[in-house]
Length: 205
Image (tube, rainbow, N blue to C red; front, top):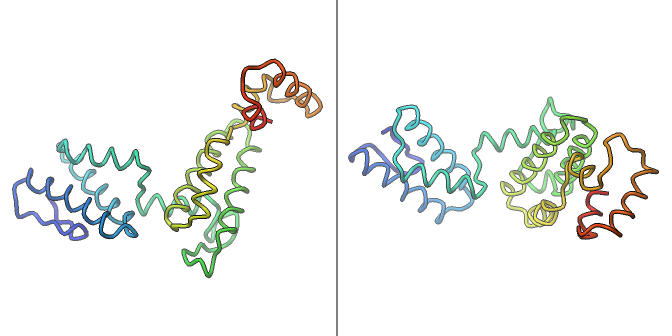
């Protein structure tokens, strides 16, 4: 097993002992230094991928990796991709460099970039669902990486209210090319006849 000084583990024990120590080191580092959890998960990902290439991933490492993935952990590479997905960087749509320093880039700038991406996703036809998911995942990653309570709350309050165009049209029961003067009467009819909540119909509208 390769050395991973980020987790303070070295190949001085048997393979099983090393993976056992890797699991302990990862959890200890995340608990004692939560600010740098992304760095530790990046290292865990490297360990898991190296073992996978070798054709043998111990159960404890696979379970730890899968569990952390399900908790929404992300690597530094995924964080960089999220920054690009929201339009930051020299080649991004915003033509603006990203800064992790709140004094140089406030939360509102992040929110506006996300909303612009969501709007673009809705206007992208058949690719809208994928782009909407991409924009939302990028916003979640950046909100978590910045440790912003405001961004986290915005994400939590909006994640269950988002619909792709396909979902919205399906909820209202209208074709994608329906005009606005048709959609509103259909919405009113669906609210009066449907068992779905008014909140769900409003999200679709």
